[in-house]
Amino acid sequence: MPKILLVKTSSMGDVIHNLPVVSDIRAHFPKAEIDWVVEESFAGIPALHPGVGKIIPVAVRRWRKNLFSRTVHAEISAFITRLRGKTYDVVLDTQGLIKSGIITRLAQGARCGFDRQSAREPLAALFYDKTLRIEKNQHAVARNRLLAGRTLGYSPDDPVNYGIATDSLPLCKRGIEGDSSTVEIPPSPPFAKGGISLPTWLPTAPFVVLLHATSRDDKLWPEADWIALGAYLAGKGIACVLPWGSAAEQQRSQRLAEKIPLAIVPPALTLAQAATLLSHSIATVGVDTGLVHLAAALNVSAIAIYCASDPGLTGLYTNGSAINLGGAGAPPDAASVIDALNSIAAL
Image 1 (cartoon, helix red, strand yellow):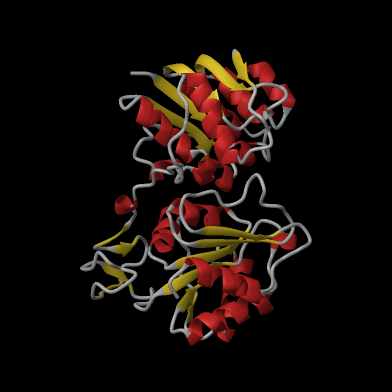
Image 2: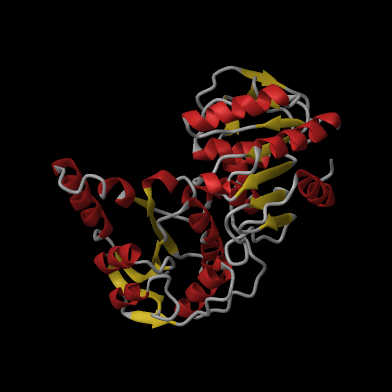
């Protein structure tokens, strides 16, 4: 029964792209113990996969802002103690950055990762006991799977499987956590399992999730295009849900909702709650952001809109219905998104 520690700390999309590694390892070593080091803000992603055991949160993003704080020093010490509290057969860094290499080096076990030619930051290879060359001109999911397979001695030939257990998502008798008001609805699409209680704000009609928020302003899709898309969906009796994660994003959601019939601005959602919302949608449309990758991982029909980056090596990657549109400096228009959505979803 091999003991394996995965090191993939961030960002959200990258962490999601590492989930198939867990599924592959489980397929070849059903009794393997698989733990995972991940940034604290993304710890909810590995938790969605039933094959992951212990999740070890790290807070590099927060710590580096206060490196001289005694509290931070104490947290770092506690993290290292927890990290070194178990000896692994393999410690596998699928991120290939200096920061992930240092974490890998601190762990107990045979440390493995990309070689200098394969790693995103070549110096990361200095921290590993064993390095492997994985060609860079492949999607991140394929690279992660190949690295793990070659390290552990198997060939990842099965279709990609993100392994998320949707039946364990936190939408149940109490509704979404944090919203105590729920309402019983009949078993109508897209809630095919029926008999469940849902938050009162969630539409009983079929809905599409519109993910307008992203980490950079140049990745934003014009609000006029979101409104055109929302109006088209409303004309078909389909509601739109507009999640948000900051005050500015909430204000944008509210502006859009004012101009889109049947639009809903939900309360603040945790990562697990957002996964639940996505899993119940008939489709998701989003800009270059981690949540649109989560939708694809949940096998939800998904459209990813690229305005300032290219999707070639890090776009949506799934066996299901997913389309990447646009690229750096070439965002798609609303009509193109509507056509793509009609091609993959039953609207």
